[in-house]
Image (cartoon, rainbow, N blue to C red):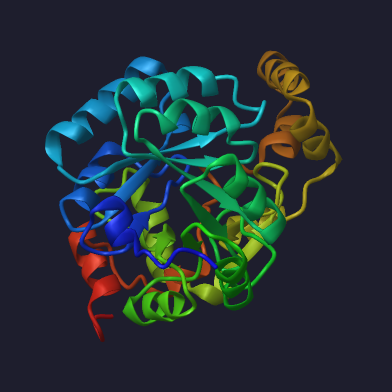
Amino acid sequence: MAERKLLTEVLKIQYPIIMAPMFLVSNAKMLIAAGNNGITGCVPALNYRTDDDFRKAITEIRANTKGPIGVNLIVNKSNPKMPDQLKTCVELNVDYIITSLGSPVEVIKQCKSKGIKVFCDVVDLKYALKVQELGADAIIAVNKEAGGHAGPTPRHILIPELVKNCRIPVISAGGVGNYEELQEVLALGACGVSVGSVFIASEESGVTDEYKQACVDYGAKDIVMSTKVSGSPCTVINTPYVQKIGTKQNWLEALLSKNKRLKKWVKMLTFVKGMKSLEKSAFSATYKTVWCAGPTIEHVKSIRPIKDIVNQLTTPNSN
């Protein structure tokens, strides 16, 4: 059975909440606000184009908050920057790393001796047991209610299963947008939660005002699964633009998502020839035109500072 140690104890924070790493959304300002309001934030290393930018961001966060700092690393071969990103995390002594999409072996190997905790994204018991044996400090249980690349299993089934069969703490990712939902997940046995979508429409977030406002204007019923952006199923807001372009890849998008080298040539071709029809077919959906979010935007009623969002998650009847 999973260790019943709350995330507050594991990371020495006031509330058992990780502000989830969100690709192209999370930034230094958000992590500083998270750390200064009783929770912790985690940023994807891939949000920074260069190692220098990454180092500057971690240094800025460290200088402006005493809260723990987390970094999300994509650990499969699709991320050639991973070795350098891991080296930077170890050198700057971040507090914890969340691994995604691959084996955490190298991350665990380099972090254990430094006291850096390693939490691993999992979607099922089989992989949870595997990362546990590799030495992970906790499991991030990505469930069906998560935003972005959600798991296949509802949280009310996945969390108890992992808690029953694993020795290490289980952190739930998905479906928490207010105090009541947080309490429901903790009651299932989770030691804490990873929460993303409700923070997109924060004042500290660096996304466009249109993206933030969409999180206010739309709700849970407007979240659909799309393969247009990355090739993998991803939850997005069903805006008129998404309705126009559809949610399934066409033949060209499917081809390009499997062949990154070919994708570069098509971009060059559309640039040189001005073939707008080809460009539209290949690149109609990008992270700038299609907005990722989960069903918890149902609880987003206005654009607010992170301080107020944390209050919504930690105070009864605060919606």
